[in-house]
Image (cartoon, rainbow, N blue to C red):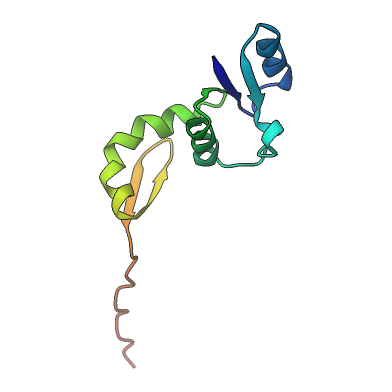
Length: 102
């Protein structure tokens, strides 16, 4: 199997998997230790690897993707936090400010 070990885990995990005969790399091997979660997911998908992580944010991100897939395809800004999911379609249009009265 092919594995990508996230930065939340030790590079020793990748080393142990390689010792067991698997193709395993740590995110640091790709110089992406500071990469945001979506970039790490993209790397795992591009390299056809199973992502191994202790970071629970990935579960939240993946759980919400089906709900916003159409918006993402059309262009949006999505903010996912512990309490809610906010989606703003692009382009962002500034509303006309209220006139100031003297």
